[in-house]
Image (cartoon, rainbow, N blue to C red):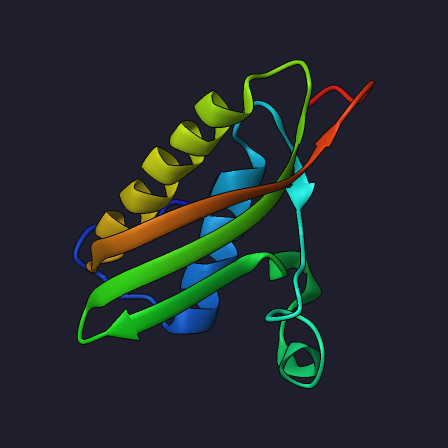
Length: 114
């Protein structure tokens, strides 16, 4: 995972990419899951590797909404908590404060290991 330097603020696109990479490294995550908010016309201008990550920056307070698919080999709630911890750490390392971090487990896949 790429770690941003402490005290250095990242632009929004870079922060989204770093968060997406951090989420993918959490055990039990199969993939980020796109939703209607990350596809469509707005999605045409986004990096497809970050579909499933949505951030709102309000004067340095970052609200994160993360959508994932998990595997049955890990407890979904534990995966969501690990994602929340990882995302809040990345946000803090980037020089922002985490306001609200919501993790939505949209799919739980059987027979997939992550």
